[in-house]
Image 1 (cartoon, helix red, strand yellow):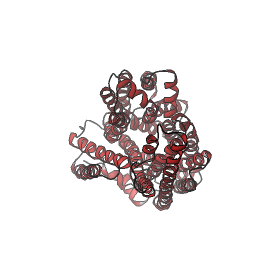
Image 2 (image 1 turned 90 degrees about the vertical axis):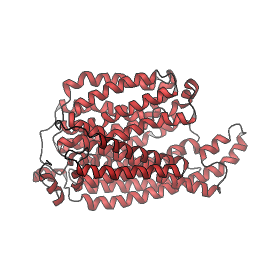
Image 3 (image 1 turned 60 degrees about the vertical axis):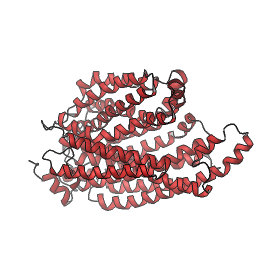
Image 4 (image 1 turned 180 degrees about the horizontal axis):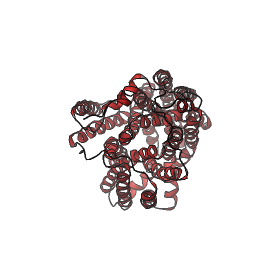
Length: 521
């Protein structure tokens, strides 16, 4: 589904096999974001990792992915996404073995950083190659929905996979899972995967590359720190520095004949609206996820593995929402499908607003699943709009921007909405010695069950108040976004009508000017 709605060749068995091959590394890369959660106590025991080192072990992978997504997407456009995918697969496999064999916390942090850079090269390339393999817009919409479902399911099942492996093997086994998948990709990929058009011999601008990192890394770091410790001077300064570097990056791109990021992509209304939609929708999901995952463990008293199992309905909701959207847009405008989904997600947030300390876990899991179901169409159709609206020789950069938007959205939701929840918690508790429920639970270790229950009862009630506030904020954001999407994307027709109308159907004037604009010298 893009603004150029001409019907391309129909995909056959080869193309769907290509999708299966690309889905495996996509699933693995998202599993790696959360697979270590259950291994942290083992890392402390075996490697002597301190609390700060544990934070870096878990966060450095996501930091590097976020920082290098746009760079790697643009590099893929220059040298070909298939070639970059194979290079990234080699480094990911080698770094996985090194991570599994780490003998110190510092070594594991370094190898996780390499894994993040390699992962950033794999993620946009898999999406760009999906776009290249599926020429028919309607089939591509289904393929992108499957790709998105694999990514979201990977995040959900990461702790479960980690728990199963830790049950029978040592902590390094969570990394070795990547090796056979990368080997399979390297063996069958050269025979199956298509190549995206390479952008010629234009060199990757080093200054632009450094400015991307100087923009993304401080902003992501600042948002995470605000969510964890509150709005102190250091994270605020980091965000301000990152934003300043972002302005410098935009100024430089305007001056370059061959920019790292073609700002002309933003003249396409579908591209810009979908990108903003992905950012805000994932922000709402990020804020809600932060509290639901804690609720299951700190209020519900579940182990991390059992809590992960209670999150599976959310993964199922995401799959259902993502996979139903490409079918519905055959007859209904994408704007209305996305908007209806966002309203359904807002209803899921409303269910979470009604949750109290003694609510059944089924209510929490059901509301959370509805949030994921409702944001599924935004993820699938929005990603397809971003990638499909860009010229094919910029598919890698567009894919990188789509995924960067999701990374930023989650960090933004965790930071902003998480800060709201923290403020409500602390206000309800009247300050106090412990700034979070997790700290309060930790402080009760060694107490009798009765004494711990007496201490934790008001803290859990305050936490639920914070979760309710976050859910209200997320619901309001989703409803507002649903209205914006209707106005911003209503020019895109249903897929069947677009195919019948031919090229250019559903383009507004801005999209049309961008499509026919001559190439930059």
